[in-house]
Amino acid sequence: MLFVLPLSISRIAQPLLVRQIILYIKDESGLPAYSGYLYSVALFIAVIVQASGQRQIIFRNTRVGMRISNALSSTIYKHLLTINTAALHKTTAAQTINLVANDANKFAELSMFMHVLLTVPLEAFSTFGLVWWTIGLPTLFGYAVLLLLIPIQFMFSKKFGRYRKATMACTDKRVQAINELVNGCQIIKMYNWEKAMEQRVLETRQQELSNVRKASSL
Image 1 (tube, one colour):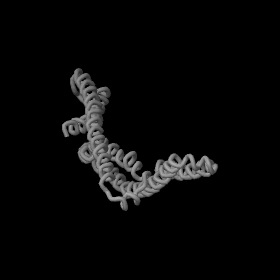
Image 2 (spheres, one colour):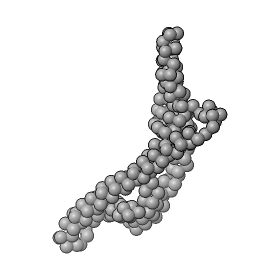
Image 3 (cartoon, rainbow, N blue to C red):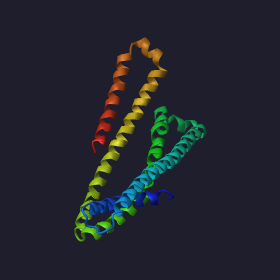
């Protein structure tokens, strides 16, 4: 919160300062000659505040995310050491590796953008007021278009979730196949199953990449 408010203020101030500079250049502001220099200095300060605040927020959020990821990984390993044998047989090594290597890291990635929950509403309402003050009624039509885009974004998010779920299932299969390949390499060499195992891993990898490409296209 310490850096969120200055970040939002600096973002909102920049277009306003640019507007004042343009009016000054067109000689429509009716302000003294030194006003242009003051606006330029203020714009420079706003850019510096935005860059510094954004870097600090990302750094602090990333640090929190890494702590969450490490805590989750530690909890997963502790849970594996305490569960009974019957439950352990239901969990494959691939699922465990996937949980630690991928799922836990998603919390670290998510934490980088947690400040958006505060900055977006603040900047949205502030921008709405400023645009209304500048152009009036047409502001409603612009924001109406943004509201119409929300269902579309929701639809794409659901599709992305389905592709992501399919990708994780393929990743589990691929890691499990590689784990079996490594553990049984002597038997595979003895029976000359290298090509068959290679084909199995490649097919699983192709399915995984296909889902990744579909998710990336959204």
